[in-house]
Amino acid sequence: MKLQKLILTALLMALVMVTTMSVQIPILGGGYIHPGDAFVLLSGVILGPGFGFLAAGIGSALADITLAFTAFAPGTLFIKGLMAVIVAIWPKRKPIYILAAFITAEIVMVAGYFLYEWLIIFGNLQTALAGIPWNLTQGAGGVVIGFLLYLALAKTAIIPKH
Image (cartoon, rainbow, N blue to C red; front, side, top):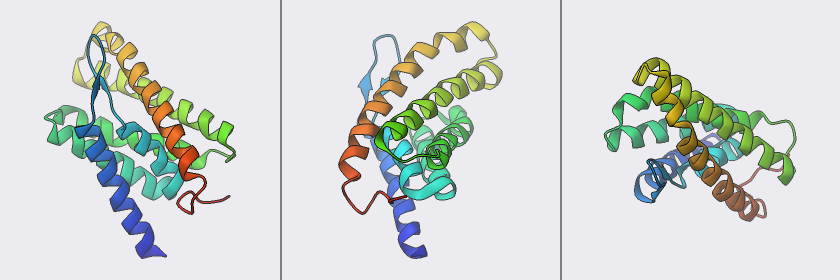
């Protein structure tokens, strides 16, 4: 069982990284939507808080490093990992509650990047505030894609039954 969890963690880490890097839908004004956020959310559902944090955080940080957004990688590691933890520890598992967990995790992502950009990257409140609409759009994309994938996967043995 431990080997299967390790393999799933590596697979989800790779899916987070590759889907963040290779499938990018540009957002007018800056940023992009990518299915990587969907796999960040699903990492929490499938792997639980510990391994979900690792798959989501490391996969996302590796995408940042590979895409030359290295300054964002430490924040991304923590923020995306935290998103998976939020989903993993959500108390109820019915689809409507999973949707609520996904939305909450994406709100935390927006707040996390706002703080990281303000306090670490830019040191400028206005520049950090300007990123919020793009992060909200990216988050909405992650919720929609992630929830549709969750609904499809919920019928399989991949999604644990609680």
